Length: 555
Image (tube, rainbow, N blue to C red):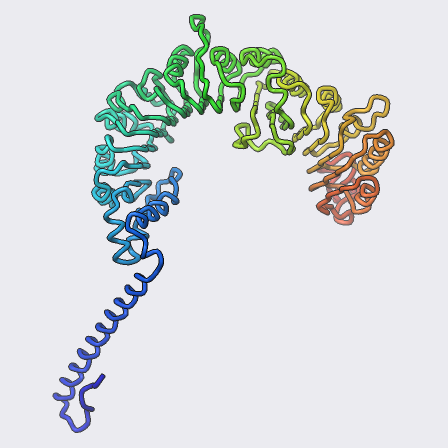
């Protein structure tokens, strides 16, 4: 590159002109270099393996990127279209993206300013739409729902006050391609009246609809959306209007291929006697009910389900043992229907509710949710009762006897209350082949009382003891050690002992356990005696006994 001559021996005016010429020359040279670098980068990118892919394969890769984002959960924060990521890499990628209409078909919580662009670029491709119909600008909502005939997946969140306006839009056109529909009402006045989702929705035409999820105040079971489904989820909000059992059953008869059914917090009047025939749901894989015990009994009495259907129940207003006798009679379980498959029993005991789960897995673990996602939990029941009702914890084993024939190998029990000796005694009688107990509770005394009996040994097959969150009393560890020795002499050796987050347990205690048990797993959790009062490890753990100042005040 040759620059203009040096500025020596020139007048100021000529020097200024020369500088300007030099700047222009340099700017042009830099622009040429930038263009050369751009061209070289483009040539280099064209040599990348992915650039050798045919456009249709590259477009498929782009669609996987967009689909990998997954549907957003409910949020008021709209976002830029994920497909923009690939349009700003290079010109070739941009051309491929713009020529792929299905790449622009995911209107999933997209910022309103992009909706018109997405609809234009998606051309006639089927759409996947997710949005808050109450916060989206009116013109944007109308623009989206005007495309109802080509929407494949529609997920709408809205406030109760806007439900009528949105239903009007949904009733303006048919939805011939719609496969999945979610309609979730959020917030709003729970006493505010709302019209039900009636036959007018989609003008009664949604022939490909297979999945429906409703969170709504009022349901009309005669609606066209309750037909031909494989998945149905309906949850009532606020004070839901009542439906009759016959209306629900009539809708289920129009869903012979239903695989998943969830009904939560619905008001169903079940006192009808004119419903006789059972509704066959031969392909049902799971049923989830959160209703009163009486509604559950009435519904199961009218359903014919496969033996391997996964059942999760959240039952309110339980009164006594007879409720469960009626329930399993309605299920028509028969003797030993579930027995051969269940291997573990998981129990959580609370003051006014309990959870009991039957699992096909040999793993013992505490219940995490009454509606657990684990495929091995085939039957899960959470039941609650009023404060005026007394439900004994022994009802757990009454339920167990109704369900299975004593094949349970693992028992997991967690509770914030004292688990009494009669409970453990009943467990030994009901579960004679039990091999493992997992206990999570602050008090272990009654379990030790049960295990120490020599005349009528409890849990003869017990080989694994898993203890967590236990408050060992002062003589608790030595007592457990003595029980382990006695059971070993009687041929009921403990093979594995696990101790996690147990208080009042020291390293010396664990060493004694290791002398008698081949596998001891301890997390070394201990509370230093010098930082606690002497009463800390005693039987009483009240505030007064734990407060060192209470002793000082007596001196």
